[in-house]
Length: 134
Length: 143
Image 1 (cartoon, rainbow over the protein chains, first blue to last red):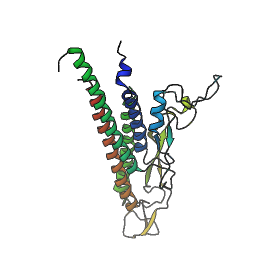
Image 2 (image 1 turned 90 degrees about the horizontal axis):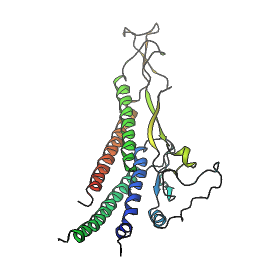
Image 3 (image 1 turned 120 degrees about the vertical axis):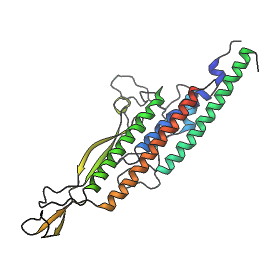
Image 4 (image 1 turned 90 degrees about the vertical axis):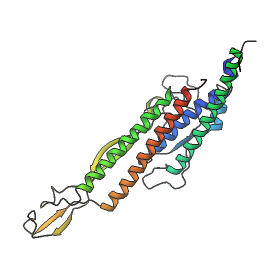
């Protein structure tokens, strides 16, 4: 039976991609912590990962004409990108809570590293199988 | 790989915050530069920040593009608050009534602005460091 590398690496490749996208969104929020009217966003990770596993189930609308506006992002952003509900929005319309975003970024960093560890272990197992040495 | 956008985002934050620190420095340095003419006196400057939404045109709906929203400095505006008038007839810069005009710089406001800017700057540096570490770890995957 031929080995499918995608199936062997499992959900971790999707998770890694999503975590790096989430890192970008959180970096957006932190970089715009002082921008008036900026609304903080985050990725609904559970929904996004479920969508990534089963293609074609995202919330994107079907477009039948080139003039239709696409609801899916051009760069493959997950539809699970949502605005954060602010605890205490500031007077200038900015909804970034720096501490909350920092915590989310730290959380995402640890998860990214965990996913990297899982992937690394799978690859090491594969190398062991290929070379036949332990 | 799209993750390199994080350096653009954090970098734009760094440059915006350093512009803000520059205007604070300029305002504080000129806080006591009096003038004999209310029109020519130094006015406090503040940068205007705006989010850049690169993916807005292609995605149609705001908030659907993942990697948009870097920061840009839209411009630097001068405060319209009236200058402080001080009666100093002995000052060589005083006008005919013996008044000099001090800039409308609020030193306390500038100090808090400076602290806020430097915290945001540190945040952006931390973002860059963390994502650099993660990227290097990703490069080492499988070794």
